[in-house]
Length: 179
Ligand SMILES: CC(C)(COP(=O)(O)OP(=O)(O)OC[C@H]1O[C@@H](n2cnc3c(N)ncnc32)[C@H](O)[C@@H]1OP(=O)(O)O)[C@@H](O)C(=O)NCCC(=O)NCCS
Image 1 (tube, protein in one colour):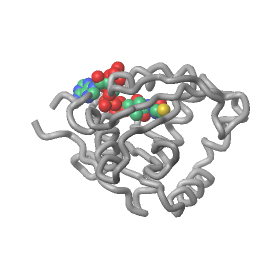
Image 2 (image 1 turned 60 degrees about the vertical axis):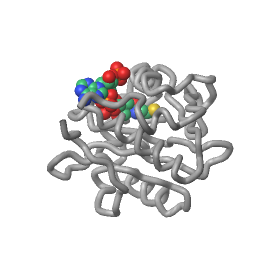
Image 3 (image 1 turned 45 degrees about the vertical axis):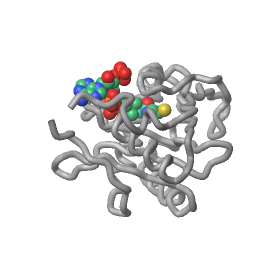
């Protein structure tokens, strides 16, 4: 069966959709997990659009979007392929209305393929402590929890670090959505 979603590089016209998905998801996913003062800037639409624009002009930022059959952006992956010691997945979000249909898996698989093509073989990311649905999702895709650390973007918030020591399996077969 044809996949419901395709993955492509983001263009400037996608940024408002990306911002909307991110703001909605922060409200829904992180409100129970972080203090209101920490959450507040992430719920500010103009501020979040500026923050995305600033991230994208930095060299070494990659932004992929998942689009549905109508061309609507339903999710995104923002990652840093040149990050040391390993590439870092900064943000992965799928719109609430589109969850559990494989877009997140496709975004992770494409990010893995891009990293391998660029000569990087591994990946890390952080999952805010308590975000058990995301942790389960990453474990299904072969990620291994290697520890817990404070985040660098807020006081008093910690995240679980997930690692893929070899992206080959993720890029090819692991976690392929049902098609
Ligand atoms: C985590 C997140 C990105 C996953 O995106 P998604 O598009 O829902 O992911 P998928 O659909 O590929 O997989 C999700 C589940 O659907 C199932 N699934 C995947 N493809 C499917 C398909 N074609 N049909 C039915 N179910 C499917 C998977 O088994 C998976 O189950 P699991 O998570 O219990 O293991 C999304 O839930 C999200 O944006 N969450 C809020 C933000 C967040 O927490 N981001 C991560 C920050 S670290």
